[in-house]
Length: 119
Image (cartoon, rainbow, N blue to C red; front, side, top):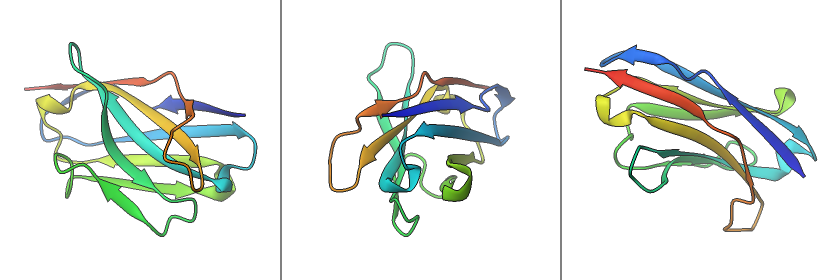
């Protein structure tokens, strides 16, 4: 079991920056690949970014590439999402998720943190 708690979401103006954090507890955090997802009102949840267990591999949705950066600190059992040049369309609830190495399924999810970008 892995428990995930996101933080850092808030109201920000377009063009601004936010850093989301996800703190993990439970089984060895470094065994898990981590991802960030988001869900806007009336829309399906979508992939934002992912990072491998070692941090050596990262990938991003096209919509955030060049603006968002995912990172992790295994010593702190945490994963982060640095979001720059925010746009109103980035407004959503952001979730972090964990999957075991080798699995394609994110099995563990946090409760989410609200990010609102005003124009």
